Image 1 (cartoon, rainbow, N blue to C red):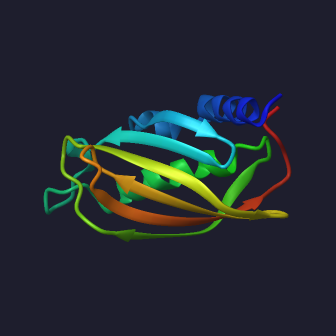
Image 2 (image 1 turned 90 degrees about the horizontal axis):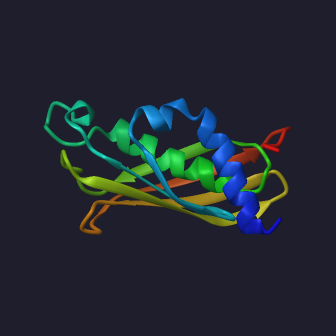
Length: 139
């Protein structure tokens, strides 16, 4: 299998069990070795007391993109540390896209940067995730 085929098959098998992503309307737009792009529409149920997209849902989208990027090698990975910086509020009805890219992968550790933008391409948040490979594979 090519690296792209491995990434796609790993994502498909992960997606089948990903109740959180599917349950919150997240869409898997693209996946490849060390990268992934996912999106979701901010619904009224995702807004906070200020009427803007709740940071927890933005984190969820970024973290999910991180998960698909670091699990794209048919090796199971989990987050060992994550941080997010919110840049602008997200508004109800906007489609947010989280694009993850691998910065470095050494032995069992990986570093990934995830950018979240709205439909106009306006930066909403920047997320950095540190992964740890654990025993097991998808296929």
